[in-house]
Image (tube, rainbow, N blue to C red; front, top):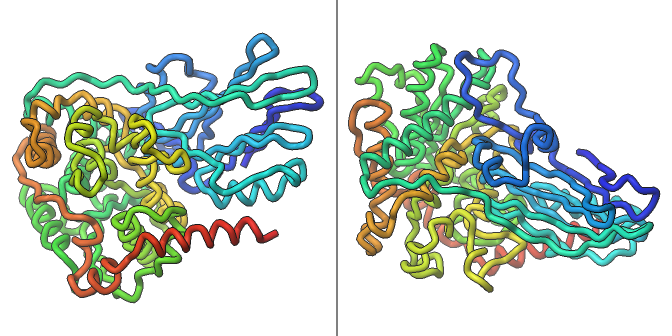
Length: 484
């Protein structure tokens, strides 16, 4: 946690409270290194980037192929100042600007409860109006520029503007060529991440056997092989709740194939079985995710909480986790009837599911931002709560740029079924390109469905009500506001 006086005046200062500290609230840059780093640090604060990056150019962030939260301050003509905020896809970053009796305060954090507690702790904000709906999410793939007027003895908030910085890498209308670019980008991100994990540390991965986690698992084994590291440093876990769903069979099929291809995967893989009673309550899930939408996300966070809790109990020393988060958003693999958008809107906006509806005026909540910005909390929060350092190579900037550059309208033929087929087609082609052999990934299966048996899902997950979740969310936030 850092508090920084940005303007350094005796009064009327802009004071930044950066609450990112420890856990997943860190920066992980996936720089390729020829040999594993023995003393890598995963706790480089966002401010350090300012020394080596020209933040006035979009290329600076296009080249940051890792996980980070970032801020920088610049004063213009002594009468104006601007705070720039940015983050990678998988780290939520919220901010709020509040004018106190003496100073103007900017608070940035991954969580609402941290912001609320910080506001309550500052004497300068004791008489300032504040509500838990005031903090805003920094949208994905943007720099938010928060501007201030700096008069004599005062600092006043002026406005905030978001500027997109991602530059797509154009791809041909060729699945094989796209798969090669996609697979190469994912593989480099995995190898870069692994090269920074100290020798002797294990790396876990939740393996459903689907196109996202399955591709990451395949490429992770290839990366270990190229880096000359112990294949048993990778540990794959398939969750089974009650009698389980399809995931165990899907994962076993992939593990067996890789074993037959010369990888030591049978010894890496295990089924993590838990009781349906281990699932948290809806109230606990809402408090963890700090959100009440959507039903699918609420189901997912309940299963994710149970998974991470069981993993921590059984493996107290495991720190690093790979995952396949972001594949659905980048490849636009969502049923449009469930999302409240049209097929035409999706095809016209390759960034829609990633960056949210910020590009559809009047259809976005600045509190949550939408898209992957909103959904990512369901995975980020449980990992942070149970002490895991998570990394999604699919969410790395290079992969993002490749996915944005794919001509999905042409490849899909402009029809829903064609769009939904693209993610598996990309993953199949990526796997063949990197691994040198073909593999057909199974059809999409939501995490909570694939891990649970039908009885558990229908009795404990399918009954979730968004109205009740919203009530629990408001009650939770109001309670935090009241408690001294």
